Structure formats: C-alpha cells, structure tokens
Image (cartoon, rainbow, N blue to C red; front, side, top):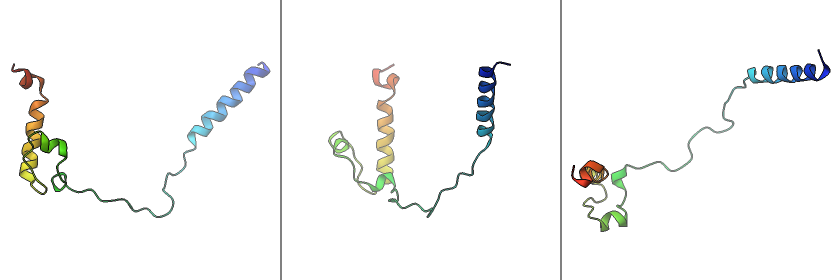
Length: 84
C-alpha cells in the first residue's frame, strides 16, 4: 500500500469513527420558555388593511374572524375567482 493511500485510509477511518460518537443534546441552564405567550388570533386587533378591505370582525369575535378567514380562502381559489 502506498503511503498516500494509507494516510487517506486512516483519515477516512477517523471520520467514520467520529461520526459514530453522538453526544447527548440537552439544553444547558434554565429550560423554560421566557418569551411572550401567544394569544388567540381573534383576540388581536384587526389590521388596518383588513378593515379597509371589508373585514367585519372585531377584537374577541371568534365567529366573525372565522367567517372572514373562510371568505379570504374563497378569493384564493382560482376556479372561484375566474368563475369556472
């Protein structure tokens, strides 16, 4: 075996053995969520864009928000939009 081939074989064997050594992946320190909690979508104020384009829901109105989402989805359907 040539010396260059032997070196390549040793380096390749080192990479293969290193890939097998998996360390435990545990977060260090305090493990609690420290950010802001999410709110329900209908508990937020409607965007100015939505209000200017015929939105009929207000903050806290779940049924109105769901109706607005359904209406928006209908306009995203190409077959509905072009009348086929």
